[in-house]
Image (tube, rainbow, N blue to C red; front, side):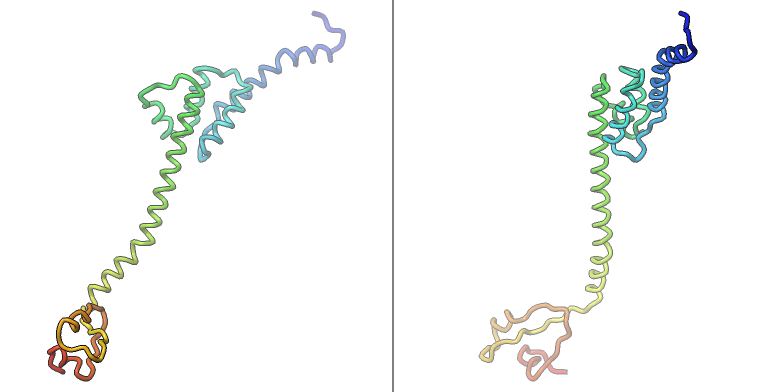
Amino acid sequence: MEYEIAEEFLMTLKKEFSGGEKESVKAAELRKMEQGGRTMEEFIQKFKRAARGSVYEGRPLMEEFKRGINRRIRRKLMEAENPLTSIEQWYKRAIALDRNWRESKREEERLREKKEAMGSAPKQKQRQSLLQPLVWQRRQMPQQATMGPALIEGVERMNVVVVRGQGTGQSMGIPPR
């Protein structure tokens, strides 16, 4: 084909070869793509955008997806009993595994924080209570109370020092000091 002007030739050349350039850029973008710290949903969105204009489809597209996702998820997907046969299956299973893993990490963090918050206080309280002497104290009883079952019901175990008043020790049969 003959061209009368150079511009015509350049436009034809661009039309013929520019599509391949766009596809190779998209393919290179897919090959460089990695999940990193992104959620699987974010990674898949970006992956789908790059895959739209690339030449990848079918098995090669699945291979690029596998290569780009995090190792722990890829391993679980590849070790699954039922092999994944479509890219949509890879997307769905990868999202489910990523969500489960992230929820597990959040739960571990909550449990660790709870353990740290509770870990030091109970041990300290327990140690203090073991060091304190156990002392018995008589409750204040009504004036008409006499020696007998009523007095025994009025006694309880407390971690306080007993203060002996007038006749308190004697009424329980304990000699005064």
